[in-house]
Structures are given as C-alpha cells and as structure tokens.
Length: 137
Image (cartoon, rainbow, N blue to C red; front, top):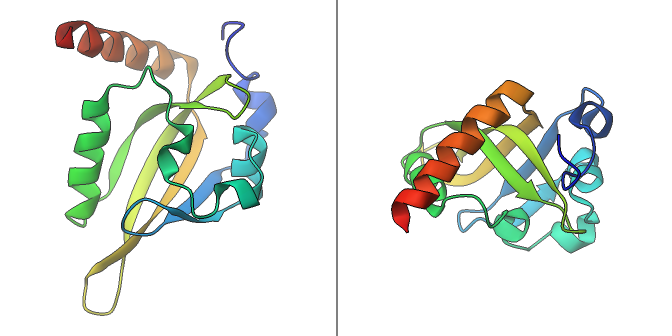
C-alpha cells in the first residue's frame, strides 16, 4: 500500500467488518463502530449524511450507477470500492450491499458489509478503474 493510503488494512480492520445501513436515498441511518474507526468520522458526523460522503474521486461514476441499478431492483451488489477518509487518506474495501425488504417484498433501505480488500484485488480493480477513467476522457 502506498504512502497516501490510510493504514495497512490488516491493522485498521483487525479482522472486523464495516457495517452501514441507508435509507432509499442513500442517507446513512446506521454506522457501526468499525465504520467510524476506518473512515475517521464520528457516528454523529455520518448519520443522515449521504453515503457518498466517503466516495473517493478516483472511483468511476459508472460503478455507482451500476450499483444503484442493481440494489434498487432488489438484488445484491458486490464490488471493490476505494473510499476516502475524513483526513483525505483512502482505503479499499470488498463490499456487499443488500436491499432491505418489507413483508410486501418492497425495498425499504440498504445494508452494506465491507471488509479489507486483498492487495491483488486492489491492483486489479485499480487497473480496471484507471482504464475506465481514461476511456471516458
């Protein structure tokens, strides 16, 4: 991991999982302690904020368009995401987002689980995301 990254993933995650929950518009309604620790935000700073508060500008927007298409249709989305900490450093996570459904099978919100991404997966994702960004220019 290079010097711009937050910390070594094994250190900041310590085997833990980041959990957050949002409403239908993507506003955070729950953030676990690990999410706060890794992102550098307090729970009060995260609640009612759009989840993209941690979006890193290097991430291609098309990734999030596909993610929203998938989860709003009631399906699970998985992918590698580069997030930005409050202090400006970044971290990579292997992400799974599941729709939360009511008794009528209607999507009422989303829950996300994230863990540290492997170095090889980060390298692959970074290369793919760089290519996507270059193609758009």
